[in-house]
Image 1: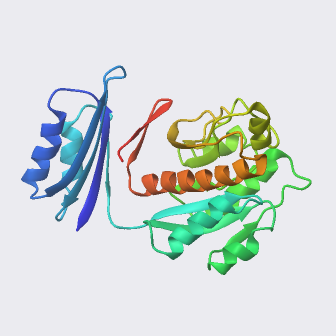
Image 2: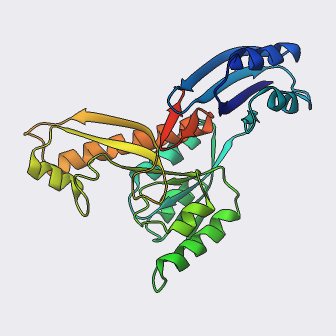
Image 3: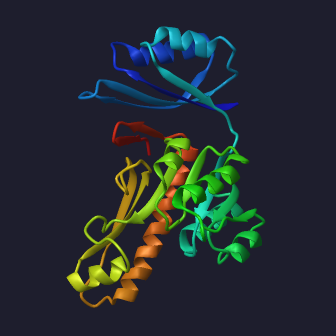
Length: 276
């Protein structure tokens, strides 16, 4: 059986030896290992791919061998459960649906929840449940609570904002702390508001891109998961730039969800540790 062990704790001497030594004692074979030490924060992070049968005493013994407060988790072959939130734009949502259809990553899209029904035919065409939760005549807090009630029916591991174009309330973010992954164009905060690609065109930018990040209470300033860019020139129109931007957003968003599904992400304060 293939297993992923994730470990994060206060840094100390001999941590790698303690983890790998215990794996050896339990007859677990290490297929791949990645580790990182944040020297400034004195934090240790490790992702270990194992094969073998894990006994009930493995995790308790590991926790007792590591510094107090260590977070250790075992992940099997089960698919990572994701609920996607959407508004009207189809590119990121469509990219996720197609990857699931092709069995291209270890994700189960449990449902899509949207505040408009624009994307309902697309979602249902892939056999995924679609829930419309309109924001009309509701405060932001009321709408977020209605969305959360639908989401909690599925108990997802992560929530993906597939170009969901509403600012989430602090109460919603706290309800799903460290579970919400967002995508946005990398112009923020330089180009905010409507039509960012048109703003970028007017300024004559030479690079456009996208950023995937975890959501916190600071708008679009949560821990960054990954980014990508592409070159543009004076010959590219605003519409061409927007098309290229959508392509990058789709790729970066899907890759961020894939990293989460493969247990390669660790939140480290206002940053992330990502084992590619």
